[in-house]
Length: 474
Ligand code: AMP
Ligand code: MG
Image (cartoon, rainbow, N blue to C red):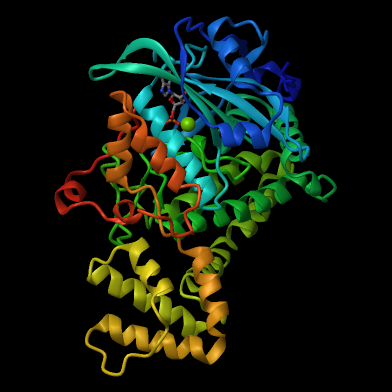
């Protein structure tokens, strides 16, 4: 018997709609994350999830969250148009998670949409969210994908699906935007206090909770996006409604992984101006955090001018923090612990060479990690020259074992390559889940060499790379 809590419903009902998922009487489990079910939760069972969808019996109260957001820079009102939280669950470590169904029918926030999701898009979210988690990056987790047994209309007819996912909280920058721009200061205070109590209880006693929250979220989001840069991940739709206050990666729509290192890499079919390209994620997260800061102004200080100065002081630290953390991360990828201007140059030069020579991001770091550390005597290319510099540099500062360990921990051997993700999804929706399961299994140990892994490590063909586009794929 499941034990769900509903602490979110303690907020004013301005923040949600209480509702029930659509009954999908023909729904069947398509993929079940047994490992996660076992580790996370003795209460949420396969049967339990099924019953909610099949009979709507287990859970009387579900709810969808209200929120707004800046989408591609434009403010708009949104909300869970196809998602419902069936409850919150306390994990073994006492942490609270939302258990959410995505694609389970119309809500008051659907804005003309059908509230449904395609099997393809939910399988993509399943693969990538789990991969991101195992790459040691905070993420929503996927519990299961159900095939609903109905066809839904997109450009053509598609199998419908519901994804069951968990996340420490679905509160996002957009939730704060909604409170400030459509609510009032009391609502904003309630949301802030609830969020802090739930996600960051350590700042509850700080002098200015709103300011501490801003600073905390900024730091955590910097860590998150730097982690994305570490593994070559492009989120693809970093709207403020997809920027979580818990700093977990979520809402995997048009996401992708880079192959050749290229800050301009952008695969999203709707992102004409490359707002959410790989390299622009730095600027975008700063922009999103600035929108977050704006929402908090009324409770940072009653005096607007004072509030703006205080918030600006926090935002002004962004570039320095980003820079420091970015180089620290990149230096770990090349096994360098000594962080100084000289080592920064080493990173800049490597990235420049990778860009000029169209080198594969993941495999270049893989090769540096797993090849012998020895200095070439006669460098042939710029890359060889860089390697000489690098090897002299690391030998000056660390021992080889230490270097290897840092590099192995920070450079994945396997990532979900775009062409492989597309291929396994295609096969799975056509009834063959063998490769889908195989890929997911490899991705649970991305930092280890595994047998027969080579074909999953290959970059795509030029033809694939030149044409590849990702879709919000709702
Ligand atoms: P996303 O890009 O997935 O983060 O979604 C942006 C907004 O569109 C959210 O408010 C979603 O709830 C809404 N949305 C996406 N797909 C649908 C759908 N099929 N029906 C209703 N709302 C949707
Ligand atoms: Mg979203």
